[in-house]
Image (cartoon, rainbow, N blue to C red; front, side):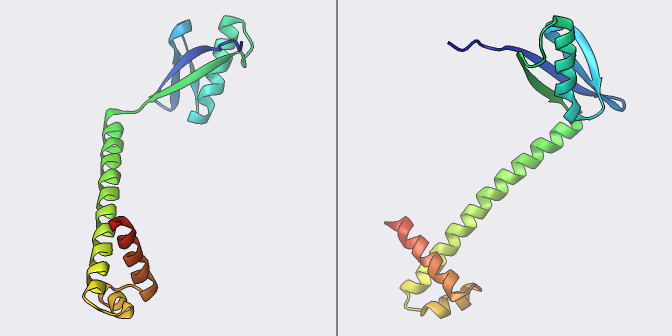
Length: 134
């Protein structure tokens, strides 16, 4: 049976020009200049305070950003999801348009010209529409 590593939480937030790193389990705080330094600094602190090797436990880092920054990141994620949905819908509509033009008897090259794509792309759109329809 594999021994389960003890897990510590490193709560991180900005404090002036440094990152403040709190480890609640040991009620101690340290600092890091960059986010890259957070986990090693937390490990060093825990190792010293608990008198254990730095590789004998796990550290979970939780960064708290300023509220305004967090709000912007959340809005950015929403917009990316909306863009992905819009892109998927646009692709579906392009496939349907290509298929309808083909079904009306237009040659593949004319379908491509009408849609503003190459005839190869028009064929690809039609093939995808046909696959989705079956």
